[in-house]
Length: 434
Image (cartoon, rainbow, N blue to C red; front, top):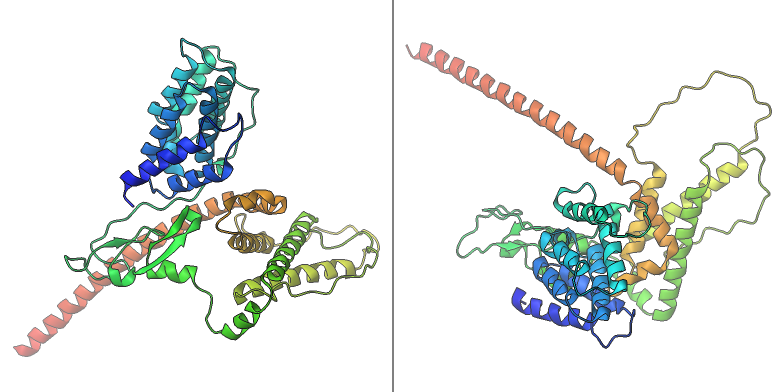
């Protein structure tokens, strides 16, 4: 589908989502998320999407304006960074300001929502050079006497983080088999990683729901293998599973995943102490049940079983630990201090469990994640690890640069050494010749 036809479809979708016939304040969430996916998947240019929203914002009906503002806010949260750059442009922000300063007046609800969105976006975009114009306009409006809502706490940048298809990289050869491109060996790009490949290395097509792409698109063999890494040697087990009722299978999977999530969250909230003041009362502990009887993927089965087994062993160790008889003054034990940016085993378990749970969410219903508060809590725990990852990346880049410099020096020394050997061998051969 070309961009021109996609832009026409997007205009129709936006008109439906902001139709005058919709009741006041009622939002078609499914349609709004579908529009967000079209923008995030780059099926349409982000500038065309911004201008289509801008056109609906200039409508005379206040209900259309309110629905358009709500749709714009949803696209800001789910449309990807390339769309944020268009929303933060002068063309779009100045249009919002012109609505506020309309000599003919503006609806109070529309005015309040525009001010609220500008304030929120200015807080979220703070510190990002390409999005700073929103913050500049916010300060100007505040100095001009516009009454913004009460001061809000600073919103995390994860509020607007959403995956989008990568920008395409250029190359003269296939980035997998290194075959040069030619008139007969055409260049293609993988929609998942953005690298360039020839036809032999990018003949597969799959949908990419995590990028908002629900239709099968071209991917390279490596990305295809990552998406289909489940082994094929368990066909007998799969055929037996398929004989069971689909309804029972779904309900058991949901119960098992919720139980694993609940146990992980409870374990993360307990104090990390090696001893307890007094042994807790003995309770009948449930036997460790395999949560993955009905899972088709043995990797998922092993990951959840290992996580639950570690939780049970930690609880047993805490209950059986003897209480200290008397506190005796002693010199503090010198313990090895782990690197400050190193992930703990609990952090790794939370990340793996969160990844498993997200992979099992229905791809056709992305809003299902909003209905599970425990999954949201686990998401917050995993998100708090981002600073560690950032520092790890910086340290790794520093180490890489240092090693690269050492490698270059070593290569230079080896080259000089080879030249010296060749000169010496050539001199010895010349002496023997005469």
